[in-house]
Length: 343
Length: 193
Image: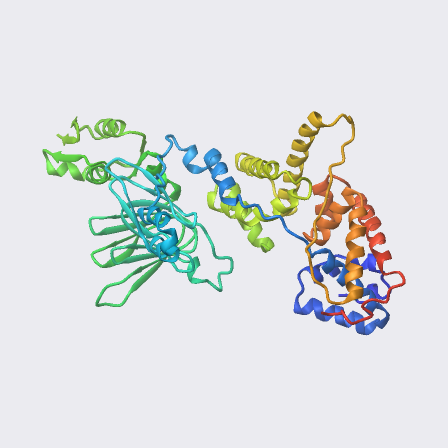
């Protein structure tokens, strides 16, 4: 940078200068050195530089207004334009009941508030869904999990400085809030880990789908980056990093990449109560009805399970799904309550 | 503060419907925007509504948005115009004055404890001078010295020309410079501190 332009500037002129203002607002080793050099070259300018610096700093000793409504306003925004609000059906929200420990704490306040709070903080929370039921779970850090039917999510109420951890059975779509700002220094509280049997899914902030059923875990990433680590009691841990669109499967103690999706957002389509399948076999498709909706499927010819539907199916109801399958594959499907029979 | 390339990355993701990037932008800028809004009005509910309107509009129009000078600059500009509209609507019901409105701009300072008597007196005078500046000059001083915006960004936010920005700021700076007339404060003692 050229020093000469600073040979005879006034306070006002210095305060007009971008480089000067920046060096006071966001000083770097380099900029501090530069202004020291200006002072050495032009000793008459030292007082001016000091006075301009003082003015800037004195002006910045301001009281800041801190709105306590950050979460509240966000909820209002989300209710109006959030992903749940734009889906075809409004998802039932997980009801926030006072945990029993907290109600107890209120009764016992004079006796031992700290103890009760500790109970509340460490209390295990478990959210379950029935067949065919969807639930949106709001975790303490703002992360949202949409649980598919016949699924369960467990976590601890107070995460604080510790790693954010959750345990999943069944299927869930995760929208993890990104807390980390400096990827070279990740604090424990910024990690988010989902545990599925022996598989750990570690993230900072992303959206991804996890299905953990029948000793088979499938993880599909929509945005961001996740690391999967499979631990076995005996052998070494294996690990895999997923990029958006990639799907990995962990079954029979092996962890492999199985797919690369061009439209990964479709992984979450079930959370909008849509049935989406791609190149699926009849067996796979109807299996998901059994797993998430509690149907029982019988085949008069076992071979029918292997029938494959090429391309995408994207429908909004079980009824529509069965009709579509029957038309495409030329099979008769009878539905009687929760019984489905394929001829 | 958010590094410019990270800011731009989030902005581009957000424009491609990334809800998470949008959430991140909200969380990064919520405090700064509220603090800026608070300089125009002490009506906290009005500021909350304005921030809410701003982000809802941002999401619903995301596909038509271009690339602003900076995301921060864009958000400040949008919030300012929403707040002015709300203040204008309200003043129609409360004020009998028609015509040009000049919405106030007021910063409040910390209760800093300063040991040095001369410096304390100077601080006191500086605050008094700031308080006497016209609202728009105060706003420019705030955007430049508190938020660190460039001249083109300030001009964009306040909807004036870059030349007027220079002119208005220079007027304010001249008054501040007079504080040191006849004062030998900080010969070099504070330099580099």
